[in-house]
Length: 358
Image 1 (cartoon, rainbow, N blue to C red):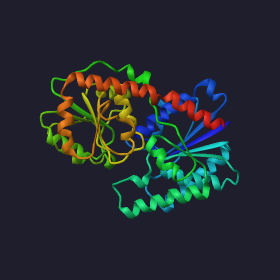
Image 2 (tube, rainbow, N blue to C red):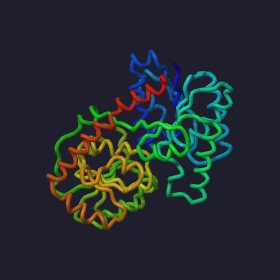
Image 3 (cartoon, rainbow, N blue to C red):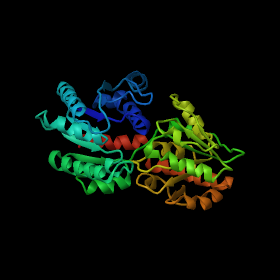
Image 4 (cartoon, rainbow, N blue to C red):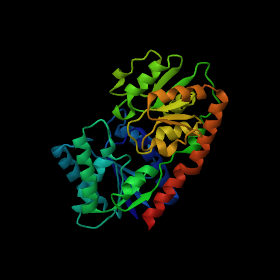
């Protein structure tokens, strides 16, 4: 069986997801039954074809193909033609599309193969949920998602519970939750307690992560230290004197060491699919404080693994509770157990494998 994955946004959590996917499906026993190819778009924030080739499993085939995130008729046409050419060469049994852009270009490419393929699509956070774009743009993306599903069909594989509820209204859907490599991440877990409470986030400083809110929270709590593990185009919005920006860390081991060194994980996202960074923090037993949005609310259980908030004022009471070291330990342990139960990558990829075999 030949399976081709098409992904446009190979960065951040999606990069981690695909690196783990390559390890799982590149395993000799599995690769004997399932021949996996990943068609991806790179050259973003340190993600180059050289990096991908060095870090992904040699048991999968990797093909770099240029795609752009926003709508660009000429560039999208070129990408679609190239995608058709590559798919014709491979002649896959299954095509699995990841992210909104790949979902559009990939469906068009599959149509022009003139051979029916088993088609799957994972949004990793629907584009029409974005809040950094106009209402008209969101409406357009929603129309595209619904129309393309009606015209081209396929099965939607949601990466989180709330995304699954939305997906069921659009077309045939399955739930395969995002997962992380728990055993790898646990190598970097060490009980940690800072003399000054340290609150951190991991990811690109971009509109989706809402750096202005992160900055406002740091200004509201000057008695705490804050750290942004990463960098990005909106780093100028980070002005609070108690925030440290680490810059890009390409060595994942150092990322986990930085993540283990914080006391509380703060996710200020405006929209999500199912955030990998939050899962990584939970494996390292960090209590999570997060915006009450799709994705975040699928991970955080109120007063059990952390807290969800709608307004910044709610953080006064939550951070007061989290000043207590034993409370942080208890919530962190609950968070770790939750990842073991629901968000283990091996369980998730085995679910995916079963769907491919159906």
